[in-house]
Image 1: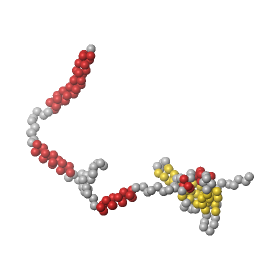
Image 2: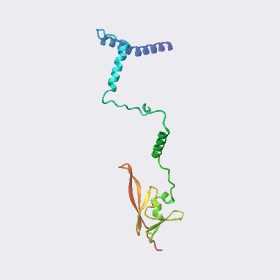
Image 3: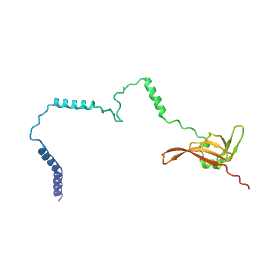
Image 4: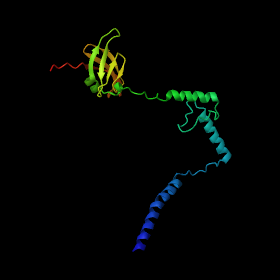
Length: 191
């Protein structure tokens, strides 16, 4: 029984592979012209290929565009020390700046700033706000002091509130936009 199954399988494979090959050879015979084509020598074919290639290169719309992985063939392999220094300087400009060490005020969320906002001071040096962190440590902030964890900056200080300008992600614009957040001074509760 196994022998018959293997013979049937072999015939099936031969038929599957042989039918397209037979059709291709029959189709090639039908489409071949009855008159004989003049055979070209290899030199003539090479000359025709060169002429086609030169015509392709001399087209007005031809532009050299290498693939991303291929190097520029017109760039020298050896670079002078000045060129290497210029490339390093250009690369350093592209690199992001070193991350800054954040102050405790910059690590605070807006809700923490609201809870910690204790008061406003007036004096000859201008207005200053007092913000206390969760450990009880107080900080004096002026206009321009960085606060908040979203690149916020104190933009104005009033009697009863401070205004913080911070970056917020806008989903429609798909970019960060500046938004002003007003932090009111909590009312004193009398006990």
